[in-house]
Image (tube, rainbow, N blue to C red; front, side):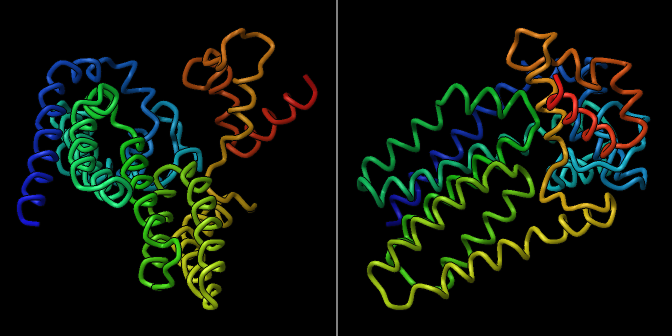
Length: 298
C-alpha cells in the first residue's frame, strides 16, 4: 500500500510540475488590459475588496449587485488579490498556480474510482493519462476559472457515489452532500450530476437495504444548508428567489439573438457592447428580465 501511495504522489507531482511549466507561456495574455477588464470572477473579487459585495462582473467601475458569478471562486481570487495586488503579474500567476494544483489533485479521485472499478494497475494508468491530458494541462495553466474546482468536485462525487451505492453509512452520504454543495458554489452545473448520482444511489440502496431514507435525506439536507447562505443573500438583495445564478435571461439572449449566426452572440454581451452595459447599469434584475422578454417576443 505504501508503494501505491508513493506512485500516486509521484503522479500528482508530475501533473503539477507539467502544468506549472506551461504558465510562463500563457501568463502574458493576462497582461492584456482588455482581458483584465472583461474578467468576470476578477471583477467580482475587486468589488469584494473595495467593500461593494458580490457585484460588478462586467468591467470595473460598474458597481452593481450581481448573482451572475457564483461566490466561491471570486472569494478565492479576492484573497489572492488582497495578498498580492489586484491584477498584478504575481497575483495572476498565483491564481494560475492554484488552478494547476487543483488540476493535479484530480489525479487522486481518478485513481481511487478507477481502482474500485478496474483494479490497481488500471488506476495508475488512469492517473498518468490525466497527467498528460492536453486539456487538463492547457486550461489549468491558461485560464483562471472555476472549471478546475468543478472538475475536482465532480471526480470526488463520482468516487463517493461508487461507495454509496448499496452502503447506508451516513458519513459517506453527508460528505457527498457537502462536496456537491461546495462545488456548486463554484459552478452550479454540478448539481445536475449530483442529483443523478443521489437518485441512482438511493435506488440502489432501497433495492438492497430497508434503511434507505435517512442517508439520502442527510445528503440533501447538507447540500441545501451549504447552498442556503448564497440563496438567502440573493433573496435579500434582489427580492426574488434566485437559486444560484441570475444570468439565464442574458444567456438566452446572446445565444438566440437574430443578429448572430454563431452559437453565442458575444457582440451583444455587456462586456462588448456599450449600449448593453449602459442598460445593465439600471439594475441586474431589470436587465435580465428585459433580455428574457426579448427572447419571448423575438
